[in-house]
Length: 468
Image (cartoon, rainbow, N blue to C red; front, side, top):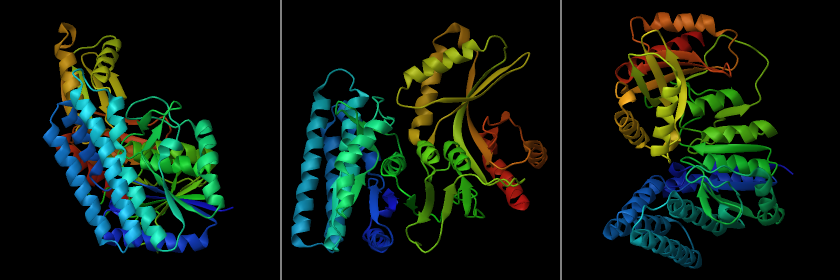
């Protein structure tokens, strides 16, 4: 049977206009496919609010976290009041929302009373509530429009490891849970609305999959239901040649390979979660990225790479990072030691060492901070690096600076050497801290200081368009 998994992001469900679009899309696709599975994120900004509330609870600031929860309740109830729902559906939603939020307040209260540092596991237990609220609203709207639908929490579906804040799915165990708890609903022509972002360990402890993890949830759903395709609905027309907020000339990319999409996500494209591609690649499940407000457009199709080769750059991405450097050379182990200590000081932030280089007189290491780490991750990581550099006399000579990685993406490049020469000529006198061709041969990354990032981004994108 043909199964379609559709994921709707927070910007796709946060208003009555957006939910009207979602309803129209679901009603149409229900006629085209044998089975539908929906995955939803929290309303835009809700997860950030819940993280802030958890931090306030850790500090014992009862008024602060209660204010945030009250605002979330008001926002969701206001959205419900604007939807064309029957009296019964509305009353059930009110009760569900109050129940979920009161449960969360109890957890916050417990966190506020703990004298020791609150664990990341406790935070995981609260910040997935936004997805639970959203799933119930969408399912109620579908039922009101004569579609059999039910909201499902992925704590009963997605089995993960025990990594706080960035858990990974155990696919064999998850497949078993889905066979027991989700497939019977599909067989009865029920449309499940599944919570993204959250899961649970095999012992039932709540976990989260990292920022933007609803995409990852959707790919897990697709693999474990043997889906034909997965569609990511967002507020842009598809994967773009660059971030349209930075480059007005950015264009929609019609097709990408799995490798190209994975590289784009890793190096800063905010449309997709980094870890969602691998499960789809393994099972050769096609992925589409579409605009919820323009459903008639085909968007971007991501699938197996074609055999044709080219000299065209598909896309340009950028992402923030940090560099440490010193006027010294020697064993690289000292750089690794700094990195390890900093990572331990910021356990909830993923830090990837991308480039490490030495000359006779200098050492340099460049670290990438994924977009899924959150908006404050660069600041948190920099503080951790500074603390570790200053705490050891041997490393006090090291300097730290904010940097930007600008990456050209193409999995079908015949030879990067010609493109590298063109890039270097285009950049002229701009100081390049480092550059490298990725081990997958799908990307070329240039590292520059932040003050040069905008000019370099435009220059590289112009080169890509001219060669396209």
